[in-house]
Image (cartoon, rainbow, N blue to C red):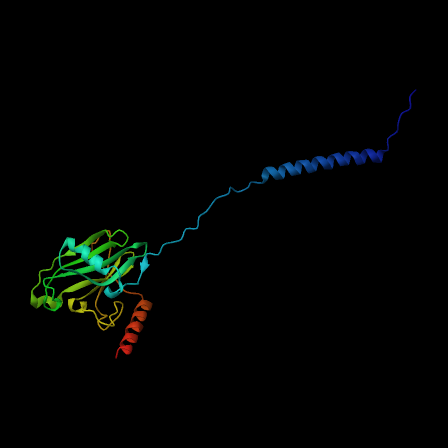
Length: 223
C-alpha cells in the first residue's frame, strides 16, 4: 500500500484564501474599468468678441484719406463736401462712415445746402456706397433752421450729430462730443435701414466728460 502524503490544513486554507483574494482583485479591476468613462476631447477655439461700439472720430484735417474720398464721391454729384466726423466701423477696420453736404456755391457762407448724404467707404479698395440722401427745399430765409449730419461714433449703428449748417466751419477747438452748442441732438441710424426712423441717442457720461475736458483744454491753450 503506497504512502499517502498528508497536507497541512493551514496551507490548504492559505491557498484557498489567496485564490479568492486574487479573484476579487481581478473582478474589482475589471468593474472599475467598465465604470470609468473618459470624456471626449473637444477642441475649443478662443473666440474674441468683437466690439460694436466706437466713439473715436476723425476731423477732416486728421484723416489722410479725405482728399481721395471727397474726389471719389463727386461721381454721385458735384460739390459734395465731407462733414466733420469720420468714424471707423468697429467690426471692419477698412470701413469708415462719414456724412457730406452739397452746397449751391463754393462759397459756403453764401451757399444754400442742396443735398445731405451719409456714406459707407472702403479705405482698402476705395469702393463706397451712399447709404442716405436727402434734398431739402430751402430758401435763404430758412437756412438757420437747416441742420447737417456729422458722424461722431458707432454703437450698433451710426451716431449722427445733427447740427446747424453754420457749425460746419472748422473751429480750432471743435469737439463733436462736447462744445458750446452741445445741446444739439444726436440720432442713431441703422446702416441696414438708413431711411428708417432715426432713434434719439445719448452719449455715455464719460464720453461727454472727456469731450468737455479736451474742449476746455484746447480753449485754454489757444487763448
